[in-house]
View 1: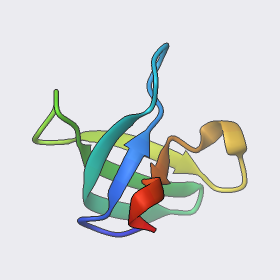
View 2: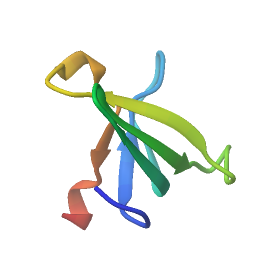
View 3: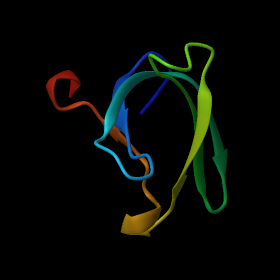
View 4: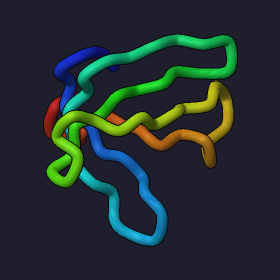
Length: 65
């Protein structure tokens, strides 16, 4: 996934929320994504852990693949 890709994010206790990637930063343990959501248009950071399904919070939006 890259900047401007449409994605959904997993948040506590609710349905996945749509957003747009504003920035992405790779780390050894995974990738940090700055995602603009309706409530957070300037972006909020989400971390996807490498090889850990429960640690994947950002996924491509189904219709943007």
